[in-house]
Length: 74
Image (tube, rainbow, N blue to C red; front, side, top):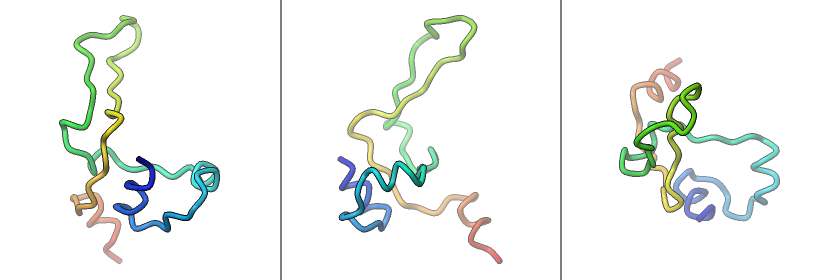
């Protein structure tokens, strides 16, 4: 699965996973479809809000969204 992510994110697929983890790489949730998330019906602990997580087969979509465009402008 990680190889697909690296391809989509235009990253060298030979990059060791350990190196990626050391650099704390992240992908913004805006780069996923709403169907890529698991949303619990209710929180297990009332003190904690619902925890949304990615499905194991989710792959980011590289598309420009409003926040990306702002970051790209000089």
